[in-house]
Structures are given as structure tokens and as C-alpha cells.
Image (cartoon, rainbow, N blue to C red):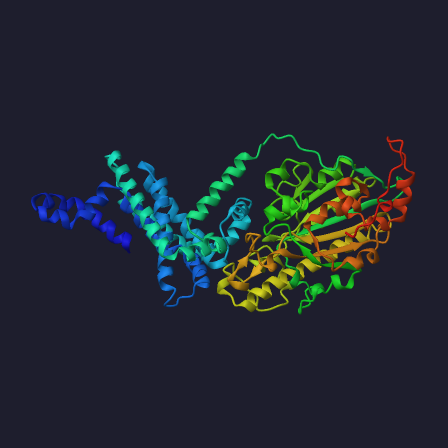
Length: 591
């Protein structure tokens, strides 16, 4: 409304110019309009106020959660509101200049409207992880995030105000005067901020030190900071970097006479541990897996809260505490290590992509009917088993690792993740606008997708059973991250790890081992409730393929149970005249 009034006033300004020149008293009455015509500062201030009023519901909601709306808190709350408004105004005054001002303001209005929608509706924070998540999203996933509410929000609070700002923001005729005006406002706002802080110095100190997460909801300042940081990170990643070696000391200890390994690793998507019946969930979401001789790992923690972090992290040797995207891309991951030790690697993907993990591997895209025969509007995970017999036959004398990257429970349109015959729990939410559905409907749709994953994993096991007499077969399933389904007002995932709820970090993991596999369920069963994490996957795969490396010295307890490997390690000849020291002969440490 403010924009409409000013736009109308601006159009009438030229008509009244002549009257103003004849009537000096009218000059003072229309001084604001004169300033608006000669300077861009009013337009900047107007945009700052508009975004604070319409795009910062999450920020003020977070503040009110800390400082309830009581009589004693009102002065400090008013101070905080003005504080963030003035900072936003100063931000725009500094970055918007000249001919680009109107376009930058318009762009920020659109971006702020969309950022506000996702923060308000899903409880997310627009940080570097979320931006990377968006950049990694393919067209199909992106389409699922476009809802009527998002479109309406963008039109009302983004496009229409942006169009008005393009119309009313004047061109600068006197740059020196404009700079002087901006400097005056910046000095004035700086003084006002000091005056706002001084009476509440203790409150601000506490707010800044203890509640930085709330400040992450400041729109558009934190969003812009995150975008700049993300762009800087991407520019710092060398495209032609030398790939650093990992586990170069790796020695394949598997006797030549033994059967070849055939392992399928299923990388799940957006599955949370507490929705697996195997972990005690009240609903029977794992009816088929419960019939198999599997080991359910109940206490596994994800490396990140988004696919773009968790997937490359789990295949890296860095671990969560040391994980950095740039560093991970510049060094070999576990697939590289296995490949250089003679293991054949195949990555099949029904998700966005491998996030850089399978760049140097055989990669097959199952998101389209080209490879995937099970596409009914959406390509199903089960299609990734198609044609695997042919692949195995062509590599029958090799150890093989096949990675299947699921679509799984990718949200928010959980109802699209499974065929209709798996809609056991009803009514199921049939929308990507989760807030429009009841909690029961959201839970039903999500649990139906878990039910389909149960079916898919059981089919993977049945597939491997056919090769059980000829290979050492095994399946490892682990989800990349979990999902929030409305708990604490939060939906989806990708929350900053420091504040991420358990629903986003506690993930399901299941292991199945065939009759010829070197390790048995009874070997792993004692560890089923042990605190594992994605950090353990690198060494788990090295152990599974009987590759010894100092990289995994701290995790060799389980490998020591392999009597055949111990015997072979003590008798194999290597280039080193000294005997190979088997993992079994070292002091055991629990994995």
C-alpha cells in the first residue's frame, strides 16, 4: 500500500511542479516528494521497511520465543525491531548505487519474498548449505517445490512491489549530492543504533552471544551473506586441481582362491531412524526387512543434514568434524581407493546426482525411462535393479561394488515417492504444501514412502541371494540424512548442524550378509546399538573388501574376527620382505 501511494504521488509530481514554483508555501508541504524525486534514498528506505514488515516473520517469531511479549519486554523488543530495520536500511544504502539501484532493489524484493516463504512455511534457514542444496536440485525436484502459495507470495510481496520500485526510483542527476545524502543517513542510522543499544547493553550482549541462530533468519541480510560466502567457496574450488591420494598404503589381503565380493550399497534419501519399525516405531513400516536375517544399526548419525553434504562426506575419509567440500573434492574418496585396488565400481542414481562422489566411476542415470523401466510419472527406485544381471556377468571375475542412490523419501511431495499400492496409511497428504495437510496426513505420506523403501531393500536382498553361491554377497543401506515433519514448527531438512533436530541427523542403517561373506550377522550383532556415524563408512568398505590401511587402524576390531584373512595376511608375500602384520594381530579396538 505504501508503494502504491508513493507511486501515485510520483506520477502527480510533474503536474504539481508548476504550482509549487508559483506557490513557495507548497514547497515545504511537498518537500518529501521533492526529495523522493531527486534522491534514491527514500526508495531504499521504503524497500527496507517493506521487507522488514513482510519478509521477517521468522526473525520476529524467533525473537518473541526468547523474549515473550510482556510489558517489561516491550521496550527491548521495539529496540530490536528498529535495530534490524536500521541495519537493513544501511545495507541497502551501501550496496545499491546509480542506475543499478532500482534493479537491485527489485531483485531483493523478489528474493526476500521467496526466502521468507520457505523460512515461514518450512522453518529452514537460508545458509550456505541450503543454497548449495538449491543449486544441486534438478528440474524435477525443483518443480515439486513450486506451490500455489509460493507463486502467490512471490507475486504479492515480490513482483508487484518490484515493479512499483522500478517505476518510482529516480535516476540520479547529481551524484555528489546523492553520496552526501547517503552518508548523512548512514551516520544518522549509526548514531541511532548506538542509542538503541546503550539502554539495553546487557540484553544485546546476551542476544548476540547466546542466540545467533535467531539472527540467521534476518532477511535479506543473512541470505545475502550466505550467497556471497557460497559464491566465494565455489570460486575457491580449483577445477583442475591435482587429486590427492588417500590410503596409498592399502594392501588387498583377500586370497586369490576366495570368492569375489559382490556388495550393493544403497544410499537412502531423507529417511529418519525413528520411522523404521526395526527401531521400535509403532507402525509396521518394515514388514519385509523384518523377515530377513539382517542387522539393524539403531544408533547411526548423519554427517550432514542435506544430500549435498552427507553424500560426499560419507564417502570421504575426512569425517564430519574435518569435512570441507573443497578439501573433499580435491582428494580420493573410498570409491577411488577401491577402484585402484581392483574393485569394479558402478553408481546408479535415481536422485539428483552423486554430488561429485562418482565423477571418476561408471555412472548411470535412472531418473528417466532411458535406463529405468519403472517410470510412472516418477521413476521408481526398483528400476535400478534392472540390467544388473548383465553387468555382473560382464565382470564375473572381479570384486564389485554397486551403489544405488535412492529417491527414497525426498520431500516435500512424499506421496509421489511410492506407487499407489503402497499407500497403506491413509489419508495421505497429497500436496507439497505440508502446512495445508494435517499432521496425520503428513505422517501417513512419509510412512508410506518408508514402506516402499522397505520393499526396495527386500528386493535388493532377494537379488543378491541369487548370487549367494558364487559370490561373497552383502548389502549395506544407510540414509543420507533425516527429515523434520513439523516438530518444533520445522519441516524438511538442511538445518544448520549445530541446531539440527535429531529427526534430521539420526538415520536408519541396515546390513545383510550372504552365506559366503567373510563376516556373519553374529559378528555384527553385538554392535547393533553402538554409536556409529557416516564417518565409519570409509573404513567399513575397506574392511568389507579386505583392504588393510593405516587409515583405518583405529577401526579394526571387527576385521580381527576373520580367521581366513588372518591366516592369509600372515602368509602372503609382498614386496616388503617382512611379513604382513594382519589386522587381527594388532591390539583390538571396538569399531
